[in-house]
Length: 316
Image (cartoon, rainbow, N blue to C red; front, side, top):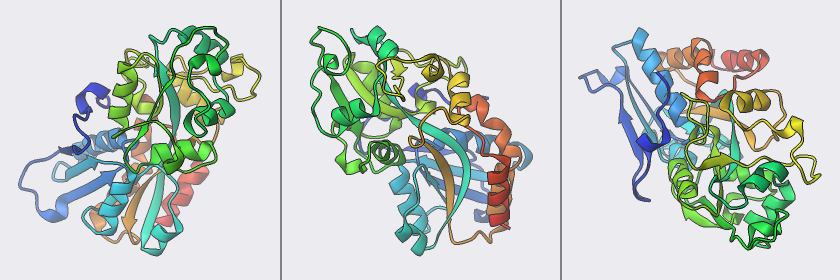
């Protein structure tokens, strides 16, 4: 079973967050695992929960996505077992007892609408890091023609995230700034931002990989497209920079280090202190072993074997 398409988990208002209860039976509390946090890890967490329940049907999961910041707050206040984190963990969070376990890799990708009058030029020329800085940070770009060789006066409508989350923090880090420095219309959540881009032909934004591509087809969702990054800043997308047409090609490129880091980044499950609960520990051990086989088909990248061994040792 694939992770859910964007339409199923679309947010309808800024105050709404996704919540799914995978088992509604009368399981005892000790048989329940709760998670909150990053949209970037949410689809994979759902997949892991489904697969884990096949071998442990007595276990229930309560998983909600409300952004990495909310997940950390929920975990530190011990309202959930795990925070789903899609950014670097801060020194302060570590001092408060956060115990992060890296579980996979993904990336934040710049996005646009396929109905953009400049779309063909965007794919051909791409945008450089400097272009993105001028769009998201300095506000120097008013029209797509300011960054794409064109005489058309197509407005460049910038969108960003309104919630404290890993994707905007990671995207801002790529641009040498912090999330609060990002300009644009604020939209809540990964699904909401993807929908905003799909509904505005002149838009630009960014999303986690899993909210751009349909894992069942490997193709981007309708009206949504990744923007190729002109990594060598030569004004064109060279063959070794052109890996965005389908999910498997992009995942492979990220895994090979062809995509910049950031915005490629580690994803974590974070507990309050080192895990002592047998169920939580067993689940994390499963994630770092059998759970890894579900990554690629769902748009995530596996850690190296050395990295996995480090995380396995960490939780012992």
